[in-house]
Length: 398
Image (cartoon, rainbow, N blue to C red; front, side, top):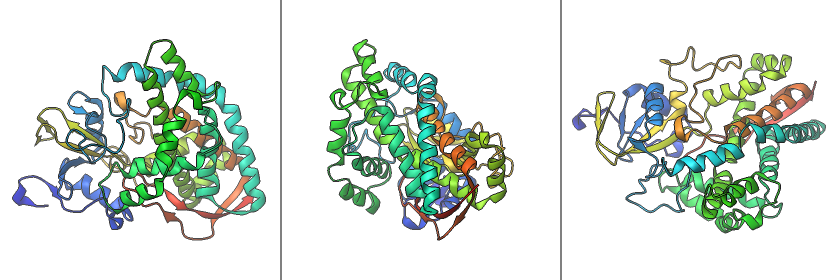
């Protein structure tokens, strides 16, 4: 605390490598210091309390997304890319775009895609079982979404190596312009150019989800440019988050063998296991909003045009909301976790992400008797995401 400022202050920078290596400590510090705190390192507000995070999410009129959803206030500083027409837009402009994307990625799409996603998951697990030892972070959690999602959207096979560097740049840029951002810019190389090419109608197969989005442009619901930008949203936001979410779930199941046995006994718990993992270790643990007007938040007065960081990972372990929040239980009713957000900007791709995870985790539960670590997991250092670079395992067939 820094009482001289007259407001609850956290003087730790959440975006250093030291902080990123110990995220639960930072989450607890933000959440338990006060309902709303001032992050002095970046001159922004933050909250890790579940009720306040949910309140901010639902009040888009007061807490806008149009000034960027990262640390940077894009009203004051230019962002590295054109703003998202979904995540960085509010109603009324946001509403028709959201309706189109909800339809494209909704229940009908999940039903149409499920059989193919499940078959791909089964084949991948069979292949890795034959190998015996593999890296569950790259060979499983990464390889699977990088196959099924681009195929479903209608991306061409060529150039997919650019997807991860581009997504990494997108999320590193949500944080401060530190060394992680600089490294991401260097690694991205030609990836932004690839994405600008792939998001066009002409670059998409006519039978994919991307074509469905462009069909809405043909119907006059959105513009051609908006359709392309919505395809870009899938490229930038739908890859790393699912990869890390699946990898973290597998790690938690290995670290909690009783929960792995519950899943093996009932593979239909796969979706619940994924949701509990999202609560337990949110792969996208922070999101930003900006005040449109002065507002009081739990007794703290915030001025207009001030950035507020929502610590979703902290809120998902808030003991005021969850019983035994630091325990991983796949039978827990995790509904109400905030890893996908909520309100008008709640993750529009959550059904697809859940279906990907459900197919892969249920295949593991049916085919693998035991997973054991063969080395130390290695975390990903990211300003905006939590995940694993490596999770070396040995799999034993059921």
